[in-house]
Image (tube, rainbow, N blue to C red):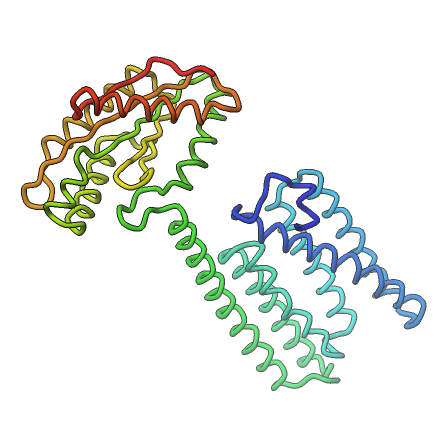
Length: 351
């Protein structure tokens, strides 16, 4: 487990901020260790008090940012503070060395950190401005006759490498972000129907109930089962059965509201999570779903019906999720026992 999790126990590996926060802490620890050690060496061994002064500035800023972020400070602010600190020290080092001793090589460490911490747009602007300034600075040194370890070819090489780095890291960051978004979408989506999967529904229900508890709002769920689905598979084949499920999900998404969550609970069962929804509203939604499913033919003339069990939450405790789903499941079976193609609802659910 990452050591910084003790400061941020709510951020796990599934959180989009996880890698960013991990990099912030890694960079900060390296900054503090490097600036502290090099600052001491510059004073004791190299008699370079001017460089040591900036090393200790970097050390102080690194410790300050670490304390800020570990005590709940904004990660975006911390990211910009890290970049500002690195740029300040880099500028000071390059100016003190007047571009000699390969000091400009340190500029190449900025793009990967900038793109990862600040994103594609922020990383592009920061890297571009820093490289543009150093290109101008190199040119000014050459114009003034400061040519030790410098040449026009070196200037051109720096500009070429800097430009290539910006484009490469910008492309990499875009690819990484797109891959992450696709992976995130895949991890919460049922591959057949395109609606949410069981994992997403479990996590969503926890969040919805937690918010409802704080705001004293009702929450309803609708558990939906396709009537006689086995008969459809037996008579028409499993491929047609899959088409029926896909068509049903399209109807469910059209019938439900924008803030409802529709997902596949398992097999031919689907769950709709309805925040801030009373028992009467849940039953009305269930009736609307039943009517639309009954009226719309799927796969060239096949008509299906559904049975729906609805349950409404009014009082939360640690067993609320299990209790709510159990009542919805019981109501769904009551709907089937009563002749199918209907909704059975419960006015309230308590522990």
